[in-house]
Length: 202
Image (cartoon, rainbow, N blue to C red; front, side, top):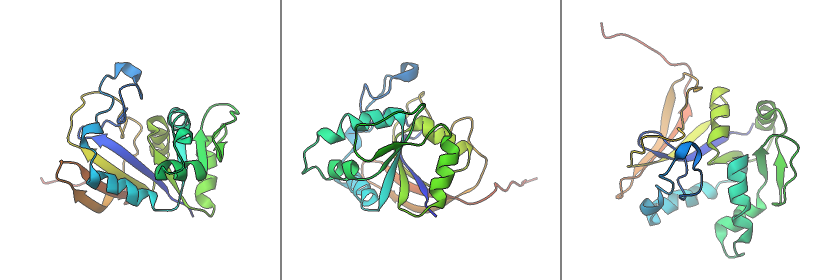
């Protein structure tokens, strides 16, 4: 049984759109792209190193795939992340029967949810989501994410694509790991913990 891990950068008000650069994703008139840049240092970089030390295949939405495919194959063989991303298998959520130039890439087909349920039931490394906000919404709606690994940045963006959108399934979560860093960034890892329990103070 494979697990799906959503490793995301998120603002304090829940936005995950365009963390890496101004032109990464301007949908909806978003103008705050690159909001994580000034917070990355050795400590936060080490969190990413820990994540990439795990065995994984990449699970990507089409927009994120195109960004990655246009960047990582062009990095030198001495770039550790580029070398890793180029070698692992990439599963891509895309409409139509698209063929890909980036090595070890394949489409999930027209029924992404069914394809991912089959992948989860198979043997292999974890399926690691990077970016891919639209795909994440589909997975949340169908309760397919096994772990949320969030780097939470001390910024308020006001608008943009949010990690937990309107289709979020009501459920409880368990915090399995947390760390804080001197620059104000927090790491929080959550796993699903069953149905939400409600009560009353009355």
